[in-house]
Length: 394
View 1 (tube, rainbow, N blue to C red):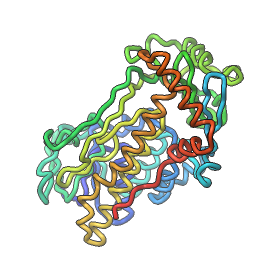
View 2 (view 1 turned 180 degrees about the vertical axis):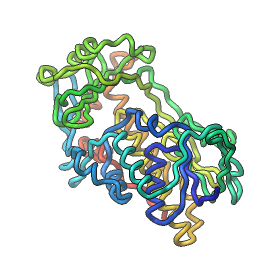
View 3 (view 1 turned 45 degrees about the vertical axis):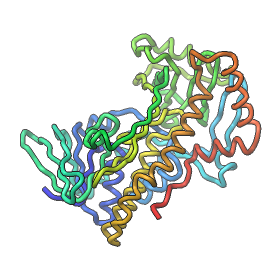
View 4 (view 1 turned 45 degrees about the horizontal axis):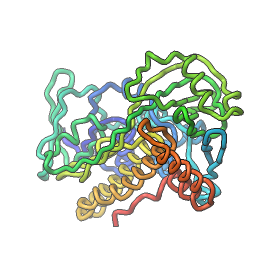
């Protein structure tokens, strides 16, 4: 087989890149080691930045999102019993976020790819990348018991933190930056109406909590728990009781409880690898960086990588701009580190750390009081939350 761009990974990043390239007439093949059902079954983010909404529109997959998604022009910070609304639209000149689950984004992209007749190879085993530092990179894999080879011009590594794209780069070519947090998020999905029309980020002496949603009838709630905690230790009743304890009284009284659809614990870490490219391999999304979910940046940061790579490859194939290739990593990393900073800030100031002393706690309170007590501070939060502008390759 031969294609122009081999995309490793059929998550939202790989599918979005494939859709954008297809619409520009740039042939691509996606290779995914899991099944399509497995990919769709992953419960992930649900807050889309304005930039990602615009990119999905450019990809021609925004129809259902526009019908079913929920536009939010603000969110709330609950600081013990004090509530502060961050007016996203008012502080950013009208920019907003869209509540639309990652599962639904993936479903829309899958449907568009199938309708276009583009090739996605699911359940591909033993995927390996070869000759990445040459002009003829190759991808080998096993499919239905047969050994296959895909020749290409470029490879996009969109296969996540545990994928093999990053591991295909010689270790001495990479520098890794990482911070692991001593807690995780226990998340619960329930078929209950959201407790509030906007998201609520709660900082409480008992720990952080987040009230989010997937639709007007489906809620997603999170609790900060120790890194050693297990899902089995949390019954639905225990979860609801603890969530109510961490929310302002008026919000807690409005909680509609019900049986969980899904519960899971996600560890929190910050991770960046530099550079994000090697030869003709470009890393995108979790393959290159991970952010704590506090700032809702994971999926959105992957989309900004896709935006940069899409512009780069379009420039290469339509204008012969091979000079753009060397700019990919530098361009992406400028935005990556800004998103890492914001996610770190949200995590550091809204969570409880077991080793914090009274001095640390007073500093945390002072930081939140300052940032929520001035328009400049609120504007900084709002600008980062709706998403900083995409970086230009030029």
